[in-house]
Image 1: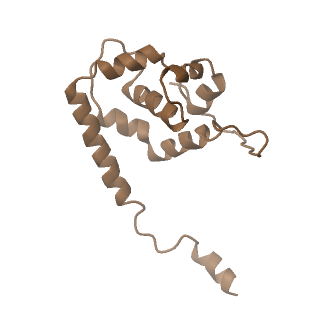
Image 2: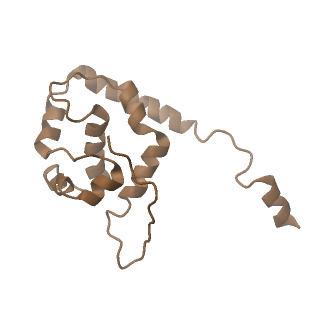
Image 3: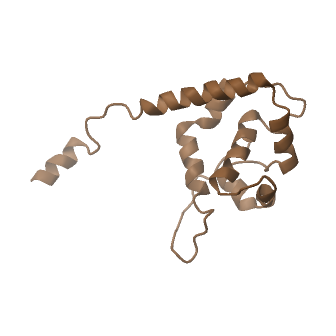
Length: 146
């Protein structure tokens, strides 16, 4: 599995920013949540073709939705977009037919696992962030009041 970039400088201005510019920030958000690990631990579905892991397949279905692509066929350009693959850490993006087959051949037990996983994620998000008394450290607060 490829690693996501470590030393990446992001510069955003109104002239050069596309609506795909937030893909890296979304990827970082998923990294903080450790979603790939969570998916790998909570989903089990034995498949014949294992070129892509379950977490990669789920994320390959999520990214087009987040990017505002309405059909799986329109996401096929992500297969040839090396920058997208580099920023998201995906080795390659699955073919739309592969994604469609993944969804159509999923057993009912996998769909039930997805529902339980979704419920767990919602439950975790409801209780996050944990109770924090301050967002600014006390030393900074003392300097502000002086």
